[in-house]
Image (cartoon, rainbow, N blue to C red; front, side, top):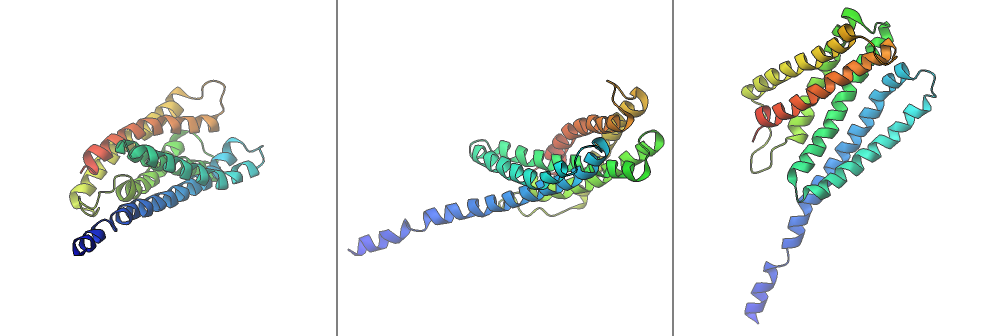
Length: 227
């Protein structure tokens, strides 16, 4: 009997201790995903105002409810798949942060165009630079403390001078690629396929974003936030 009593407590706490961290982490990630979806919906409002001024504004407002739900669903599915392939879950978070950065970039750009009425020339290049800078700052904090956050074994994600320098250099190259591609598409190539100047300005932003997205993922993962 004494031997049985000593053996019983050894098996009781195992399951709760393993399940608790996963549950807490998932709830946190789903909350952050919902926040990202809501922020994206807010940033879409000035884009919608510029590109579709004749459409009912209620279409854009409905995204305030739809996007948070879609983001939460997406991160949950990625978490399930990520149990087997960890990279999938990290990639899903990067995509969500990338979407937010994209809408920060486009949202600020379209807000500047809406307020000034300038959608080309030197003004556009300056506006694009400002919008990209805001998106880059947003990208740093989300990617550092969420997407590429280190595990407990690797230590807390503290900022260091070397990391800031790496981030600056990677972002500087990304800035040149993003703004450069957008400038070429808008100011050198010009509107195509019958699109107006304002619509083509957003197309130019898309081109810059796609090139910058690939560079940022590789640079942040392999250079800035490497384990």
